[in-house]
Length: 353
Image 1: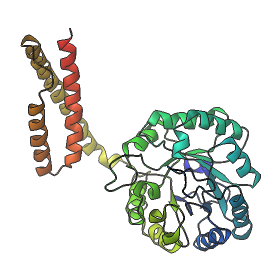
Image 2 (image 1 turned 90 degrees about the horizontal axis):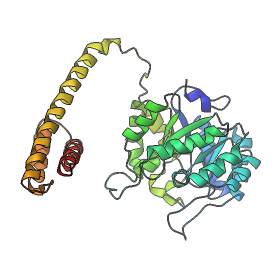
Image 3 (image 1 turned 135 degrees about the horizontal axis):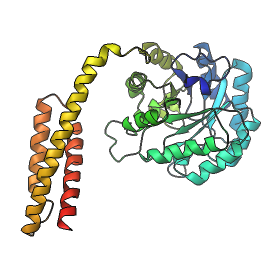
Image 4 (image 1 turned 180 degrees about the vertical axis):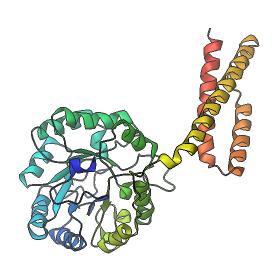
């Protein structure tokens, strides 16, 4: 099983693996208070940020190495494993010196191959689980590249954390989930453990429950959830942290579905899907042939490829039709946009022959 590759001794291999704790280690009292509550509820791995990269200077940027002693005390007094984020070679050495059990690489660091390579080299020969958050931008290859840099130095206990992708559109989520990207990562690397970070995706504590459930429905291996003894007064990311009591409620309410159930009973329905996909491809090919004929006409009559009014008319009409048929209008917008882009590409080729 893929989850077992990052499990520490004594951790139940049953999904989900849960990593919980404050966004930032603020004071020794806050860390111990949170850890003791979590330990009492059966949580085995504490997370806490020691070094906090902030978008702008001037905010709370972590207590630094001083906080590592607090995590060491958590281990001694609760028996929990402890984990933290590292962004530099120095962070790695400091964390290892204090006996940190699990590390993760943050989204900003993942986006920098130089930094990831430095961390990888610092970890060479160390037998410790390392989780890699997706980069801030939706770049799957960059995410894979960071994972490969760790693998290339001999690390075997490697996992991924899906924390969403930055976007100007923050109407619902702090970071857009873009579920198709981690799904593609799963497809390419079926043995890679994937953990969901609903705290950073949602940015609001009331979104943690539904996002956690969606991650379980997508067969993720675990959850990393920001949990604070007094979230309203947290020094960083207060809006997305929950109390240990609320975390217990969230985890208790999760429905864990069987990812290994036999799919033989679905064979007839899947056959129908395959047949419909064939028909869709044939229709798309036919549509593209007609687009090419339109492209030839435009060339002969010295017309531009894109006719904005016509495109807008098609877009609005088809989206309304799709919505009336029970489909998500955003989904249909994405589909039509992709079809139009390919039609334009083919017509540009014809105009430039």
